Length: 386
Image 1: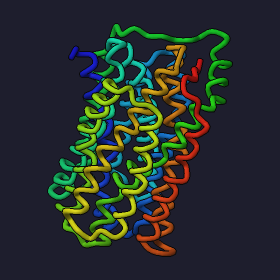
Image 2 (image 1 turned 135 degrees about the vertical axis):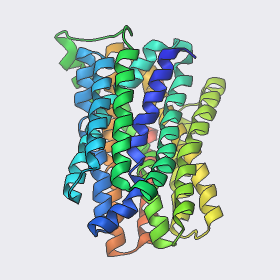
Image 3 (image 1 turned 30 degrees about the vertical axis):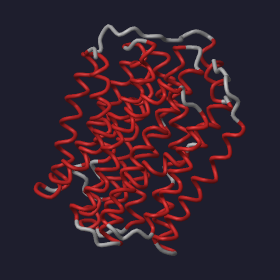
């Protein structure tokens, strides 16, 4: 594998680390600021709200100025907000800094995928998309494991400081290591018209919303399961951390498996639908399964399928895209739609728990995931977007 794709994949892993290194710290944050699952749900939502809101501006700027610069800018913002999170004097300040962390993440995500397409052979793009998403899970899983140890021995504040420094180093590597990468930009009069047409593209909206199960699995299971397992089932910190780490780390294997299956069998929308159905159903056992081994098994299967769901979505959109300069914006639109809907679920989960219980919250999320899948019947295979 050439150096430039490795830089993109490595940056993706560190970027992901900052999404999930807060997960093991939520327990300590709740104790320091005297808050419960509802407030922690809002804290989690703040990050994803930043990711959602700035997806489209990031895609627009990438189309206008180039993917490398915009993606590098995003990692810098992510690193600074993470570094400063360790000095938060209150939960509202931490909410704001996590929101800016989401902003930085938005500016990295779709420009990095578009950059990846220019540094790999077209025939291997689908494979690298799966590795790209698998790298997210490697970074996220290691973020949970390493930062759980740092939280325990140095405190959650110092752990954030370390994460911010590491991320700023990677920002330097990304910006300067990818110099000379071919860029496709669109600064003509048609840019706004093309973007307007993309925003109205029905296939993008259908595919993104139908995949809500993948968002629920990533956000709620990935972010809140450690707190949930410790609070509800009284799992030890190690058992809860291991379950979340398994969910995240096996995603890399899921990415490789998805790449192999996609390349060999040309998997499409039917397999995409099957993945989302299984993901929705596997949320239900979290409500009742008070077994460490059982939760480990469910976490592994969820992790394997979640990455395949995201990867297949991006591959389908990438093959539909005709204008290379707008690929980053198309993927940004996909992420915007998913984060727009997906970011509310941690808050909804916490709210339902407060008025009812954890069982009702998990069952509700599983039903929501299943409810969106029939939208795929509206998708027409072979549809092209500009």
